[in-house]
Image (cartoon, rainbow, N blue to C red; front, side, top):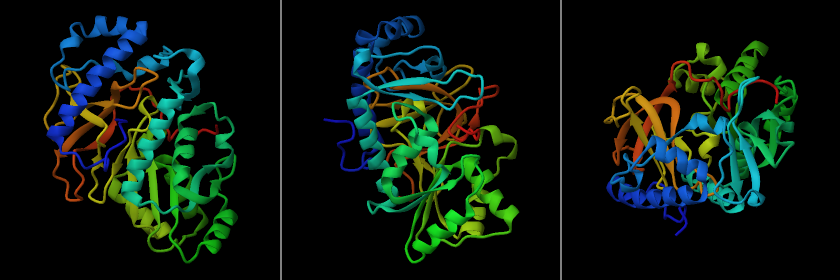
Length: 356
C-alpha cells in the first residue's frame, strides 16, 4: 500500500502507527542500504548493528547536514526528474535532494492529504506572499519555490503580492480584494517574509486590509534571518487579525530534505505528525529519546523518500513532543512544538528573504 493511502493522515492511534512505521522504515532502510553504497557505508560507521533495530527510536538516522555535502540517490541518476535545494544563505552550500517520479508523486499526494485535512478541498482564490518569478526553474527548485509550487495547488486565480525586489504591490492586492470581496480566500507565505514584507509594509504605509470572513493564512519556514526579531505565535496571529482581518492561521514545519511530510498547526497551536511520518526528540548531548514535554533536537522520519535515503534525519531544530492521541482538535498521533534552531546551526530555510 502506498504510504498516503490512509483514510486520513491523522486517523491512526499512536501504538498501531508506531508498529506499522517501524516495519516499513526498517524495510526502507534495508532497501536504501542495498541501493546506495555511500549510505550503507555511513550506516555501518554511525549505526553498527542497525539491522536488528527493534524499535522506531533504534532505527538509524543521518545528520541532515550531510545533504549539503553529498548527492545521495537510491535510483539511477537518469531516473531523477527533479533536484530540490534548500534555501542556503549567501555563500553557503544548500542541501540537494534527488527525486524520481514516484517519490515526487508520493510527496505531492502526501502534502495534499495533510493540507486538505486542515482547510478542506475547496480551492479558494489565492494570494501568495512571494514574487511571481520564483518558479522560473522547474527542474532544480529551491525550497521556497518548491513550497510555493506545492501549496499553489490548493488555490486558484493566483496572485503574487510582492514585486521582484520584495516590495509590496498594494495596487495588485487592492485589485485582488476587489475581485474576491465576498468570498473567503487563501493566503500563503513564509513566516519571516509575511512579517517583514507584508505586515511591516502595511504598517509603514498606514494601511489595513480586510479579507472576507473564513479566509485563511498558511505560513512556514520560521524566522531564520530575522531570529533576533522573532515574536510569539500569539503576537503574530494577533497582528494578522489586526492588519488583515484573518483569524484562521496555520503554521507548518517541514524541510527540503524530507519534503511532503509537513507538520501543520491546528487551532490549539499544536503541530501534528501525519500517519506516514514521525517525530522523535533527542537529548542534544546523549542523543537518547526524550519524553513528552522535554526539549531537545528533533529527528524526523518519513515513509516517502524512496529515491534518496532521507527517511530518517536528525535535524538542526529544537522542539518538544506535546502529546499522543490527546489533542482537543481530534487528530490522532503525536503533536509537537518547534522552538528554534540549535546554537550555531546554519541560518537557512524557506524564510530566507534575499531576492532569489
